[in-house]
Image (tube, rainbow, N blue to C red; front, side, top):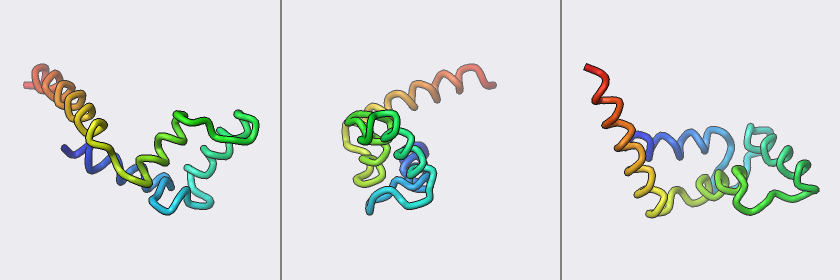
Length: 83
């Protein structure tokens, strides 16, 4: 549950916002590097594109469901080894 709240906040702190990528942010540097590596554009499906989508719209229901399942399993595994 905390990851579903904390992750969008962390993505926003990097500079991936609903209004676009914040100037001078880590997100802007990532976008610049991706564009240079890609010949001027950011590839659809790249890390920068996915993070911007999350920053702009938040997580989709499918992403929330997948993250809940993955993080729940990880939490259970960690809880099993920590007394």
